[in-house]
Length: 350
View (tube, rainbow, N blue to C red):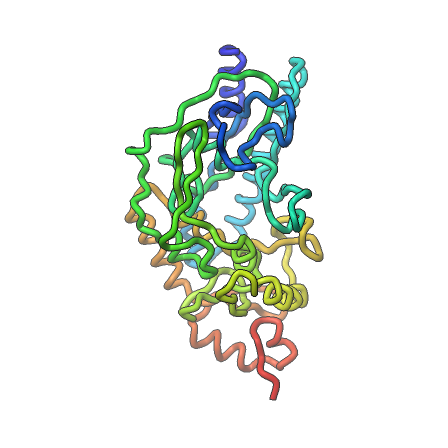
């Protein structure tokens, strides 16, 4: 098992990961339901988890709202590569006579929860595997942060009945998260509670991060249904400016209305293909909390400044998006015919 464990770790790194770890049913014991490896493989004994990095050079232009396409393409293809590595590693194990199930990096959810895939509960949480196996730490946002690339990473894994040798968590005293909460400052949806934290136990080890509210909040902004920050001074890459309710229970109704407007807006090529929404395509407009975090606090602060000073995104009739000042954006919306304007913000009927 030592030889196979080392071979799998080297395989992940060779295929494109920068960090890899091994978790087992023992090291994940006592965790939440999405830490239960037997959910996807009843005979599961262990899981290989690995991380790939997004291109750091594309983050600044994204925050400045100078270039959306480059980072979107990089994130799409890095995520796809992570899926491919999981598939190849699972096939490798299967050829050796083991059972193995690849776990995609994103957009794969349990179908047996109350609302099915709409609850956005993963079969297995890559985050739990990653923090327990030493790939990274929990940042306040709940993202896995790494000393190499911050949280601008993609995670994927493979669950197997092979009894692989587990790797240890990283020492908590080396966690660079200092509670700056810039991850919350760049989030317009209020997804993470600014005070309350949650603690999970994985194999007698405790890990904490900020408590997350309804995942619909994240989907509302990251999925492009709205984008204007409550301050009105900056936005995500979404040209819409629908308000998000304060109470989680009010979000589904607001989301349904915003979704109708979303479907009526001009579309450009790109984005993730997701089964849970009409049209199957999800615009990629945010991920600010994931992209802002960097081991160097000065880099974090600069990225936040870029976002705040990057302006507000508007959309031309042909679908082109560009950033302008908040004042110009307001004038642009007010000059629209009412029918078109309703695709971007709530319009009071006169």
